Image (cartoon, rainbow, N blue to C red; front, side):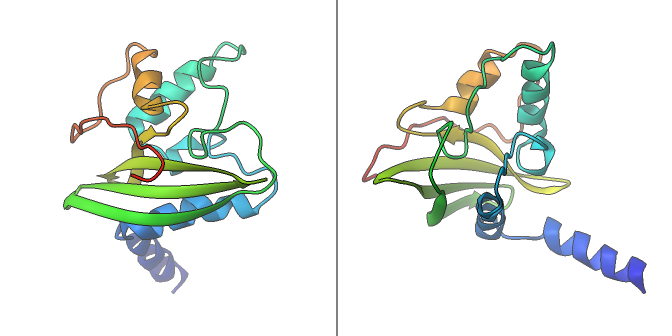
Length: 160
């Protein structure tokens, strides 16, 4: 009985919609100390997960020294709202998310998603401050293969 329930739960997570995945990701910020980089395979594509692991190896601060899902390092509180979801294919989606960091500070981000065997994962993040952050990060981490499908990179500006 428990095995059946776990199997159904795993299938439901893999079949989750892009919106549901993004809402689940940002719900983690309700917990003190939430950091998507602590277990990146739960949130990021295999390519980004490999780049994050490679960047953080060696005990030094690497290229990645902030949270790409809020385009920030520190915040008073974080609340996110999915503004739009575009789904050009069954295995790709683009989420436009507004992140409120408190103290009248917010960001509009674009997250590109791909479907993996583990479900939806973030393959690219764009924000006003860092631009196509994940793309630049991956470019700075040689030896990491590209995720499929390949998607053009863009930067989201406020009001777009």
